[in-house]
Amino acid sequence: MRDDLVGLEISDQELERLTNLPVKNELIIITKYLNIWRKYLVNKIKGSEGATAVFIGASASLFAYILFDVMVKMLAGWITIPSWLLLLFVNIWLGGVIQSLLYLMWRFKSNFLKQKMTNSLKILLNDVERYNSMIKAIDINDQIEAAGNPDVAILHRERVIEALNMTRLDLVRALKTEKILRENKNFILSNSDLFSQNLATLTSMQVTEQATEHGRILNEALQIALDVQYEMGRLQNQG
Image (cartoon, rainbow, N blue to C red; front, side, top):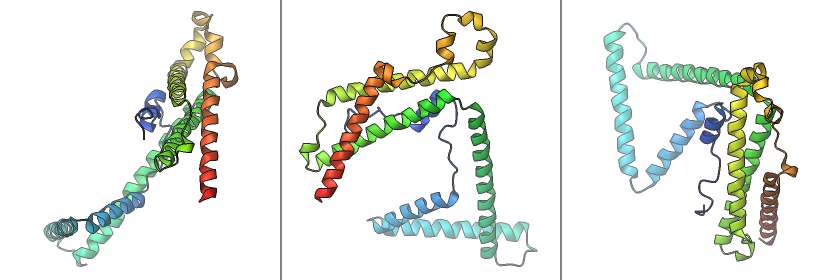
């Protein structure tokens, strides 16, 4: 990613911090991370340090098995099944317990998010997704250009980056405003006289893209993303 794009994307961590909600809540599947770890080990084994990785992995597994076998004999000598089979059962049971806890956490966060979700927040989250998609599209276009296709270079790049920076500032400001309104909704409604001049504007906060400078910039950036998609399709057809 080029230097002028670094830091423009609104990350999941920043989005959750700005909203104070688990807006990117995903169910963690243990097997998925086990597969990632397995692929990592396979790559290590295939690399120059393969022998070392195999030795360390085998040593760690053997040490864990011996330690487990000793503990079983000391604490549960009455168990007659082989320790390796017991270790397998324990791992399966432990994996099931952890996955169940992860599922309950995911359900709790999902229900909490559903209760706190507002119409304005839905609109803003959709805009953030579109905004991040623009940055991704431009990054892909930059990679295509770097691969030897100068004809796909983005014209007036400085203006594009400036537009993205302004859009990011607007999105961050809107997300902060939405969070303040959401977390103080009861107080605002019960003290509406204190907000006589600004209450109507704040409580009806919407992303009016067509009527604001933010909308003009966003539409311009969206057009850039469409141009990028067109160029990518043209290059694919040529190939």
